[in-house]
Image 1 (cartoon, rainbow, N blue to C red):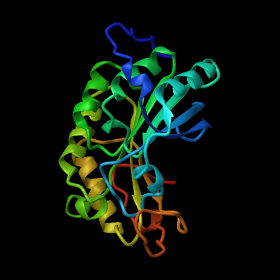
Image 2: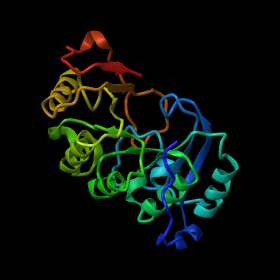
Image 3: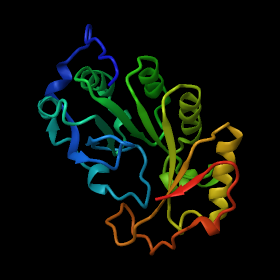
Length: 238
């Protein structure tokens, strides 16, 4: 585990506030090669039609930060990491002091983000508070607004460049629904990554049909390796 940061000058008044909708106490799937729990933060500034978590996106915090801290203290030396997910965890104003507090307990920190908050991400990188990032690449520029109902494509690129220029391990991932994306879009997105110097795995998550989503969608036709011309970036299907 990383050296624990100091909590000097950290205002802990946020401990009596609620921002976390729910949490998963144990997972071996969400942080590569580590045991972790997942904190699901309520609210999101994107409204992707295929989102599996409408109750989180439109929900409110149910747990006080102090309750989560008590849970985490009981899991010290039992879990390796804490995954900050949602919704979009980085839109919460208390996220930096909370991550600093969790980090001080000795946990590795993974952040799942839609790439809309480069200033927050930059601060976390500068203060060495995160250990792994999963960055969602929602779609090519011309389809980004249609998919996300937001105009954060430039911010996504900014977040990508911040991670690319840092030493933090990170991955880029895309959820594929055939009503919203096609194989040519994936090639376009792969080329964007290549042009920006990305040489890591690019993860494609096929949409799982029969899920409760933000908007009703027809069944998605899964994409596979045979549907895409692979360039230098290694595409991994999940």
